[in-house]
Image 1 (spheres, rainbow, N blue to C red):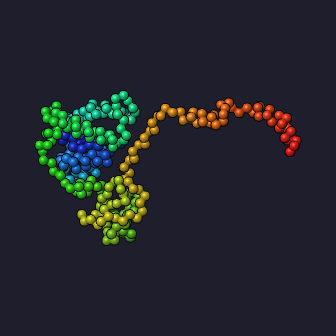
Image 2 (cartoon, helix red, strand yellow):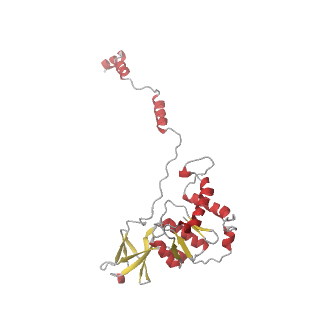
Length: 283
């Protein structure tokens, strides 16, 4: 996910993730606002993550006008698509696809390292190189502006998700995503808005008619994250080139002192020897 300033071609926020969804979009967008300030407008695609209500609510809280590109008119997305071509041609060619070793390419240990490499490329290569369309480096053109910033607390509050629930009249509790929370007694039977982080459902704040009633008390928590929070895929163990089963077979052979299979005929012949018979008679 990446956000590009239309005037300077400066990439304000970006984030590599496991999937193209509203959660990864929010992470990239939050980084953009925190580091580069509030834009007047956000021009986005019509994909599922861009039309999700969470991004619309966030932009409304921040006073950002969100505009979707007209369907079947890719011309409006030409600048960001051209940026992604640059990413593929200059950055991704240096990263091994699918995490498999390749000559001259690097294999990241995970998303954190991949994002670190991308930050280095963006800040020390893309931002300082003269752009072919503007005739100036994106950083120099961006620095001429005066971005607007907000406090960290305001930013965190703007990116909280929201849901509307009705408080149970008898128990003054809320049910959400399989969890049960206790609220203020005076909210019994009333409709409330809850705000929460999708990564931590044990902590939700309750609002009624714009007034905060504090955080609800968790009563029964069965789900700690929102269903949209996907777990990263498990890494496939690297092939070591060692035949583990053969090593075990060699270890067994060394312990037995022989590689031959057991001969039952030899066992029978040994049992019939005279010394064995004499020992039997003495007993």
